[in-house]
Length: 193
Image 1 (tube, helix red, strand yellow):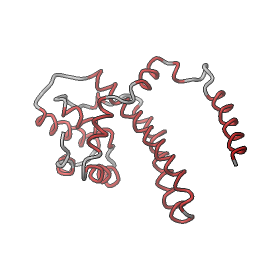
Image 2 (image 1 turned 90 degrees about the horizontal axis):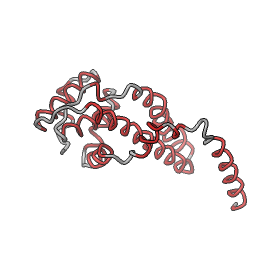
Image 3 (image 1 turned 120 degrees about the vertical axis):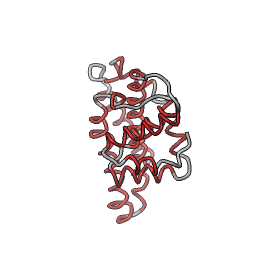
């Protein structure tokens, strides 16, 4: 078994060399390097702290699954409000929706279908692989939050009252997501900034 692993590792290393050909490496782009270097940013830290609060994960997932809300945008609006900053559509980078559609959503779909179609139907031996997909999905979400963080820093406005900004940010985001503002506000009333 160990010998097979060495062969597998060698194969992966060779493939990794081809995949990281400097002519094709996206990390040679200064903007991409900046994004990669700032994955652990203030928005990510805030999102991690808020998401781990009791009841918040369930509230956010309900908005996402039942109403099509984007949790990253909600977390961005909440973070900006906690900083006394106004959220507007300008806080969303031009390529954000493409990143979500092409990177995050396919991983989420794969992870969710693996749970039902593989782990529950065929056995727990597939759970480890599903967890690896989950980690990759989380990394894609972290990249999305880094994109939002960078864009927020480009368009930050004047500071205002945190309470006023929170209601305003969530109302504007609800309009953008075509969700009733009251639903957004009542669902997220338990989130502590």
